[in-house]
Image 1 (spheres, one colour):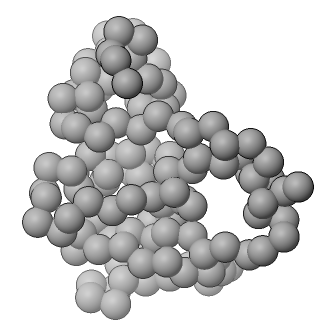
Image 2 (image 1 turned 30 degrees about the vertical axis):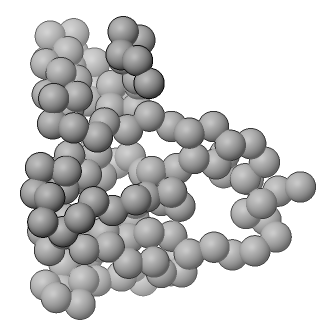
Length: 120
């Protein structure tokens, strides 16, 4: 049974400049941050916001969301749970930026791939 087909779940939206996140129903008009009035970035269904004081973690979140990726664990219909990799640390982000610069691969593609040499 499709999980997301039965109920309409709220999505996580984040403002990386204010370092806050909200859960809102998806809308056509878009959502704005109540603090700075900047449009919120859609972070997906399975976004876990870091603490507001953790600037390093928020810089990684800003890079991932800026590349157009979302934090999703379910397939679009919700039938299968297959967690997608997203970098959590600045070291992981830095390594992927270096590889993207060397190989010419788009950064968004590398941010979604786990390093095969890292232990999960």
